Structure formats: structure tokens, C-alpha cells
Length: 180
Image (cartoon, rainbow, N blue to C red):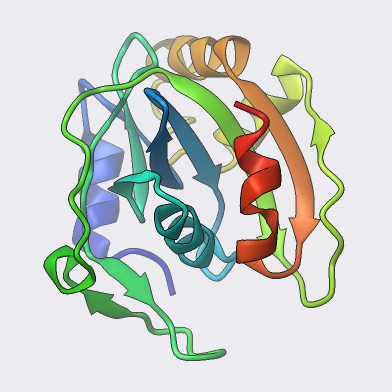
């Protein structure tokens, strides 16, 4: 199950911002985007990065402005119980999470999906491959390509993008952070 209908409608109709379905954290003044569909393991990876000291930006959408900077969208973390498709919304205060407040440039895009027992073998994507991965998770990619494509291009050209299936989130956090 994905985001509530109202969130999708907001993302689709946004005029000044582009919404990419992604988890987002900040590390050392740069944003790390984790684009992916629901049930791909975004929240687990966001939580593991937070436990390592990253700053929280979002568990649902990367909100990008015209310059390709990501803005905070601090929704509660949607934590699932096992294979349950419905996530329980956990308020940030309960988890002692202080969300980021400033727009940041994207430094790293991590295209990944949880697969039990998968080995982390990241490959660096070309900007074109990165743009396709971002488009695949952009709510309004086809609605106004003259608006969406330049933003996605800026992110794809300005950030490193890596891709790999993964097993447990906590084990790959150091490897992710060394790509920044």
C-alpha cells in the first residue's frame, strides 16, 4: 500500500515542487535520496541511516525545487510489522527524531530494494540511468515534462547514483555513506 490518496493528489498537483517517491536523509550537508515503491525497504534504510547519525528529511517523498534541492517533508515514519502491507505511523517525537529544516543539494541517490540474503554490490549509474530511476518514482513525471525533466536532470547530473539489491539495512549503511 502506498501513500494516502491525499498525499498522492498533493504530489501530483504541486506546481512549484516535484515529488519523488523516496526516503530522504541528510549527511554532511548533502541529501541522500532513496527512491522506491512502497514495500521496497525505504523506511528500514532511512531508520538505519538515522541510527548512524543522519538527519531526517522524509520517509515518503523527496520534495525537489526548480534548482534540484530537496526540502524537508517530515512525515511520521511508516513502520511495517513483518510482511504487513499497512504501515503504522510513528510520530517523529516518539523516535526522538529532529527533522532537517534547510533545502539541500542531492549528493547521493541510492536505488535499492530489500531482498532477503541479497549481497550489496553497488554499481554506479550513468546520469541517464539515474534520471530513469528517478522518473520511475516521480509522481507527476508525465504531467509536465518541461517542468519535471530539468529538475530530474539537475539531480542526476549533480549527484552520484548507485544501485544494488540489498539484504539487511544496518550492514550497508557504512558502504552507502562512503559514497558521499
